[in-house]
Image 1 (cartoon, rainbow, N blue to C red):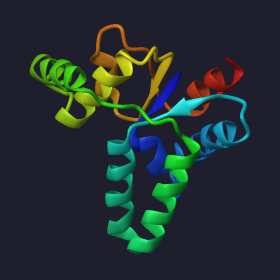
Image 2: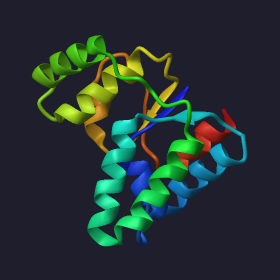
Image 3: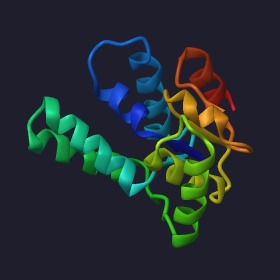
Length: 143
């Protein structure tokens, strides 16, 4: 299963950026059923929070609901995931607490790729990390 980080959702719906088109392509591939992907409720919550800083709350909530529908079933972050995430947070300086817990949850979810623009995920051992640029997204879509 492919796990998407907040950055993918933000770039797919955001302003012009070099990652915008590949992130949109990735979301379209999920919507078309060409690939399967998921995320966590916390990622969607973070997306809504960030979106609401630039757009109105209704727009942010509407997009959050759409992402939740598209990416369901969502990851269920357990107490064990939280514990492993906090250990990763202690060990990897570049990895924030939120991302550490997402990485731990993804690692227990039979993840084939964690897709994020945040390069700190590359430091997580045994986590297949993919940058959501044209090359990375094309590789995911082709399988």
